[in-house]
Image (tube, rainbow, N blue to C red; front, side):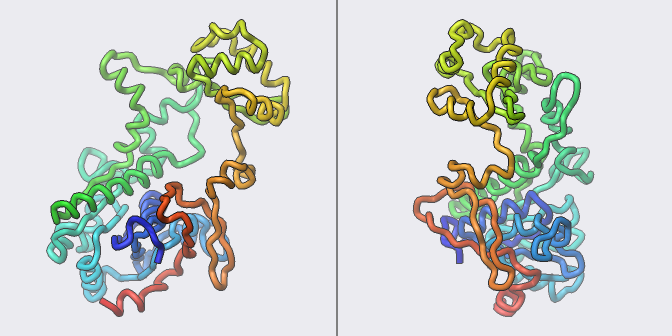
Length: 371
């Protein structure tokens, strides 16, 4: 059993793909007992999606460590009853189906609370349980589009598709963890369960907090790269180096910009804070040195100048080594699997040993036979 602050919490995980499984993995890392429940006829697609590692989809391996796995057939009344018997023992059910699917299967919140009045259901969907688009299919890029976040990515000529899943993770996984924990605290205080609606489109809107608060109240709506934090100023931007690598300059405050000007022997630039008049000069300056030279120079000045690391550089970066941000989990037959560590560190649980993602139905006997 994983030792952590969520010891004693049991979560039934009906979710698939990315947002739900990453959320439940985080809570499993924190000590919750997470039981992944898959349909015998239609398991989590990520088990089989390429690319593969040791015969299993890398996506599945990335999102399902520290969990137990059982299989049920919800068209079978006996298996459905097993699910409700599990509900009696559980704190939370997490699902990621479209609204109405669980009701069609007969395992929805209203039915489940007849077996456990304090059960918590957390549903993570693209557009929520109500509203004009609630039954529509969608993926990360669609939610970013409806939220307006996508409109702010790129330059003035073109919108650029992000290379990572902002809506799935920032709008799905993390809010789902928050929803589960808040509902569990409410249950501890009142004894009441509840249904919690997590819509990824809603949950990425806070990424626009600066932009929209100004726009809603002054009718000033920024275009792409117009806001200072979006790259419209010289002191908060990215620059290419002589070796074709990139540096990130984040000297927003005057003291950091002054330090940068001192670092490059350009005191006359100190009055150009939040401007863009010297952008071309700064670009030319960065092209005069390799990234290694800039990194060495930046260590001598407190100027918020850092390298933009490529993925193959992360494991060797001293920061990530110091923070133990990459770990290995081991399987007796499949060997070691390198993964990203649980990002939140708890002082009381600083030495964790995590378990390999489970085979489908690996815990049927242990869990179902003990009901």
